[in-house]
Length: 397
Image (cartoon, rainbow, N blue to C red):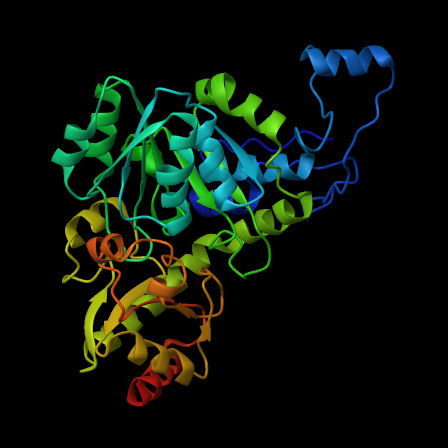
């Protein structure tokens, strides 16, 4: 492999195009895709040196792959993180970041407002291994402080959260974590490093479902864990190497190439979401609109202090509950019904019956996931077309 260009003091959009690039002797301009599971050695002694760590190089694509390395290095550059490791999915990233550093007797504090699968891992899977957990209102700093124990090792949160777009004060929670000898994990999938960089606010670990906005076109699964070198060395590297939540080099290549347009796409998503949110707020059948950069969002000021844009998701509530929400979704002609998000295509889902279906009614009510709540991932279509589509669907609802 040829040496990669040094980033120096490149700005974000330049890093998104050129960060982490490794060129072969052919000097290709588009990053190379290495579809290989193994690597050959010139001699048995070289193989031994690779496995002992005395010689740098690749051994097996479960451990590392040149294409995956480029994706990891570019993500690290964008997030301002020392190192990164890619995984097969966002949930693989979340699960690995937790399990690699925890053992029986440890304790985790997490915000209640999070993706249903994340909550399942924390509430149902961790306790099977003797790991205790406490869920708190992420917006209440006092609850984070009160939940801390001598055994607390990790704090976990999403901001903005899925699906209610709740915002957590990153600086305040990071301070609490560090005072208690714990690390803070932040799920940054909704904002992406184009809009929010949690390391700047004290986060120790950042996770992504790169399936979402990083890919941006609904093509391939992936995840990323970004962290400091000591966490990688002491916990994550050994766990990933031996449990194998590895990303496909092809998926890593897709996501690597998508990073080139991430900043441009996120600006367009924010513009479209702002227009759609304003339209929905004027509709009589819509009883609530949640968008972080709207002045009526409960944590509007905090969102603007941490984020450079409100993101591409708008959550709103429609009068008439589940029946009206279903009529609305079924009447849409442009917007697709899908539980995914972050696509170039606009997607709508009903969290009560999809992403948060496994939560108890009481847990959903506590989070504000009502029967009439719908989550809209605003794509890259013309916002006027989306508003017209919603207008005719609201009439049907």
